[in-house]
Length: 436
Image (cartoon, rainbow, N blue to C red; front, side, top):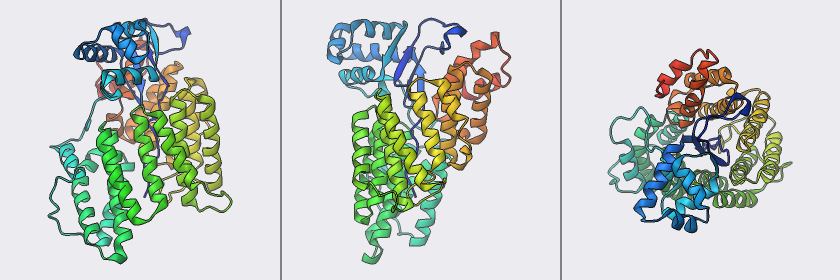
């Protein structure tokens, strides 16, 4: 069925901390923001967390600077919110020195942002950890296959609350089915278990529970090995590379993605669509990790391979392991690489060449549009940014709920109303919870 085929795509490679308001001629966002893994948080949150965690560890600014191998001046400016550009590698070192995750340091929200009812995440945690007794009757094989297909549909539609409610029971059913299957059915039942656990890991990563996501993906990996499916195993590794990248572990993400890609590298002239699609997806994740670490030339080289894989397929198509890899996904990735390199005008120009973004899954399309909206905001194309954000809300409202990037764009756009009318912005601010 596939694995998460996108990485949240505003990956600027640095955190922008700007204590002063830049004029229009500066062509830079003025909001004090920090961007990481497709989400942007107020710099005040970053500075507050650095200060709180440093105090908790009873460290002076000098001691923290020494442990993290950064300057004292950098820490002082982060904590005070003064003008400074902070590389994500510095944030990763600060998090390691403070013994917290990057998500913790950046005050990243966890759990369902909307549509939650009661205890979905707790139930999913217990199911992934195997704490729920398997007191279920194994479902019929064809019924389980249909259920897993429905789960993938919900995932690609961005229906995370629905998915969180469904997955605990599906995990138990898949385990019961795999445990009771006859030998002739072992491969297919193991495949279903691998897909359910891969879905669980992917959802948990979206909900900022990355460690639990890795446990789910480890279970998916074991099931893929039991299924004897090399491409399914590679698909799970692609998901793992994505989660590692979300955690700021870019070297590890690159290694997982590129080493797995090397292991399955196909002859493009003879390979099946499944082989090319999985290989291309792994390279795309590797490209993201390389770009995020600031190696933009290397990222462009990997992008060339992604484009070659897409060209080999010739059209956007759903394969067994990828929901829509092809030329459109490759073109979207080129936009992402430009945004990562902090080249919003180039990103906008490349976005104009993405002819059929509606050919990719809805959730992927929505996240791509959020990156375009940020580029438009950064390039002072304010009304275009508003229109793009409203389009995301119409396309996938629950995806918007789980992306703080939309909120940051709105916070950046609101002060511009003194010079521009920006119809639709006020309603958008109310929608995402930004005070006016």
